[in-house]
Amino acid sequence: MERKVVSEAIDCETFERALLLHCTEFIVQGRAVLQAELRDRLALHVDSVLVLGNQSLTHVHLYTDDVGQALQIAAHGNNRVERILVGGDLRCSP
Image (cartoon, rainbow, N blue to C red; front, top):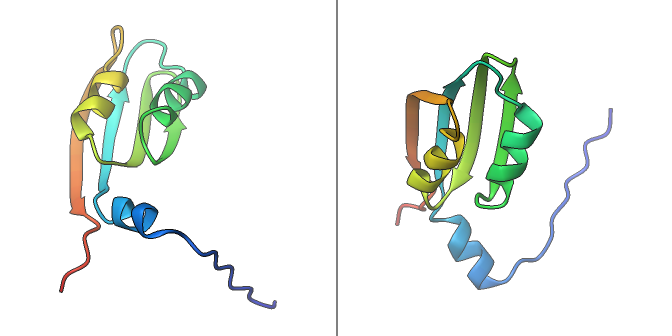
């Protein structure tokens, strides 16, 4: 299988913003968590999001510069957010 490397030029502002994103994971519990709706609401406010699970237990993995806002969105309605892991940020070390 041939590997393809895809690269795309980005401007400095986009690159600098990407360096400030926090890798965040958490579990959302509720009676009827709708993954598509949750993903769509989060996607409006975060840079990258993955939502998977079932209606009672959902795992969310995202990159954002505002972790608090993402947690508030996920805790909408009767949803409960648990096991929050903020894995640091993507800042480059000198």
